[in-house]
Length: 337
Image 1 (cartoon, rainbow, N blue to C red):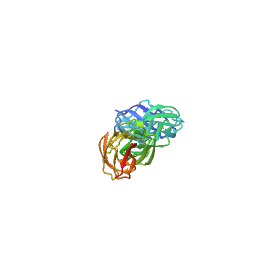
Image 2 (image 1 turned 135 degrees about the horizontal axis):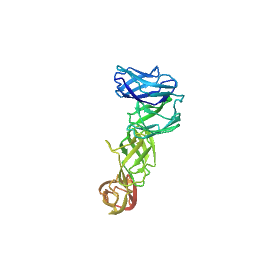
Image 3 (image 1 turned 120 degrees about the vertical axis):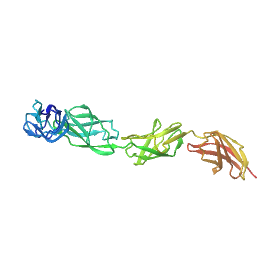
Image 4 (image 1 turned 90 degrees about the horizontal axis):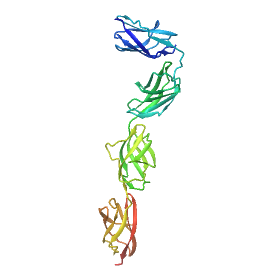
């Protein structure tokens, strides 16, 4: 039985030829020749027993599409019309980059985009969502991290290419410091990978009040106000970072408060043990008596014990420091020996 042709898509194209077409039917295995009228098609590929792809030869008017195989030539009246449709021309893509997982909407603008039959990201077809003479919206397919050419095919031919960048998802592996005041405002250094195209940085549900990209592996951000321990994430055209190896956590601390010193006086020779009561003391990293550092131990969030350093007789201010900042001060009196 001779091949049977049931349809050709698209049904029209440029008289100069070169329009990519898909021929549907059956009995195509072993087909050797595809003609548009009396002219031979080029780039003929027998995809399956029911599909052939090819490029149209030059021609004019309306030409019957035939397929010739070992058992004969198709006789169905399936036609292709040569028309002076202008080739599509692309001007912009928006956005020009996206995640390797695809799925994002890309808007293509240009001219002569009517009746688009295919949009390619590299060699991968995209799903066409809308199509007007000057704009096409598509769902980008998945692709590896790379730069690919986006092209549009219409009955008028294939467009010029525009570059689209597939961006790997960012990763956050560390934040320094990992503690800060619940009022925000401090600078945090974020390290990881894929950070160069950062469009946003978030501390839990709250966006950073500003950020600066240093390199693909580092950026700095100004922490917003917050509470508790949160995950720091970075968003790029490749997506938003997710939990993985590393330590992307940031803990908000309330400002330390001292409520009492027991005792509140001691020898100018130092060495007295002073109990410091208060709140938010867990992350204490310094205790000073009149500006002089003291050795100390933190027993709980509300209790610390310091050893008073030597100091001249008189009254000094005792202050405690954490990553959230300095505490209030309370007086401590050094007695003369």
